[in-house]
Length: 131
View (cartoon, one colour):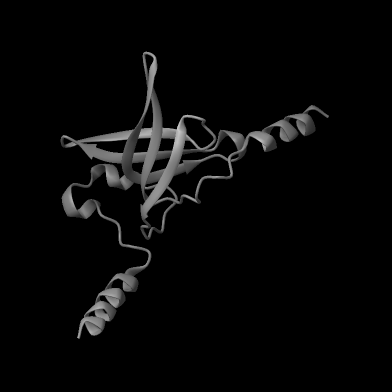
C-alpha cells in the first residue's frame, strides 16, 4: 500500500526535461549556485564516468581535469539545482563504469566518438560544395 503511494509521489517529481545522458558522453552541466542573496549559473564540463540507480535516486558522475588534477562531481538527475544539461559529444564505450579514465593522462583520456564517420563525411561535403 505505502509503496504505491511513494511511487505515485515520485512519478510527479521525476524530471523529463533533461536529455538522455549515457556513460562516455561529454556534457556541460549548468548548476545553480547560491552565493549570499545572489543566484548564478555555473557550468561544469566533463565526461560522464558512471550512472547509478534509477527512479528518484538516479545520479551521474562527471569527471574533468582542473590544473592537472582530476575533479569528479556527482549530480542527482532530479535535482532542482540543475538548470540544464548540454551534450557536447557522445563517446563510444563498451563499459558501464569508466573508472579506468582516472589513470589516464593526455590524449589517452579521449574516447572515440560514437558517430565516427559523420565528422569526415560533413567535411567532404563542405569541400565539394565550395568547389
